[in-house]
Length: 244
Image (cartoon, rainbow, N blue to C red; front, side):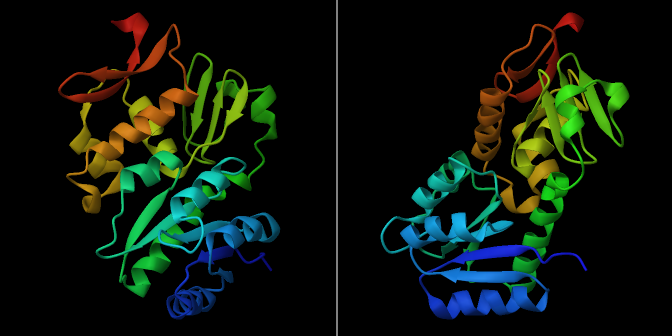
């Protein structure tokens, strides 16, 4: 029997936390509830969850700081939760490394669907990828991938190999990179990328794309043969420099 995925629920409202745990337990997830920020950081290290549901407003340190602390050591998916009416800067959350966010109150089916979607995308940790670090060449790849000099992006196992080393990145960063690299030199507007990668609920918030491009550029420095290019006033493209 496959081991249950573990989900850390961080929320100071115990009624909401228990309700979330009930939804997820019915879907055969293992859950643990934490009510404040400091304990969340401690329990994250001890529990080693596969995903974190992180409330924004917490006693002690807030959800932003918890996210920041987790990202110092781990790429475990984080879905931020925020009550309607709270001051919630989703761009700041994304910059700190959150993978998704939901506004309370939320539908239980939507919550479960988002959890499943994030966990499904993160299963790249399970397939064997050790060989990619030593043999990142296209001939060693399986499944659907795109490859350029010093860069292989494999959609089948969500693995990115850059300069011979595996890069860790959240699902949305990977999907954005793969989509752009799959269409070299094609310019996409922010709105097109929002619709393709994030879906209708993000339409209008073009800063989301900018944040993810910034994070990708921090990991993938301009190469002499390719780069993540900006087309001012329009959007972005994966630019092949030798084809200009």
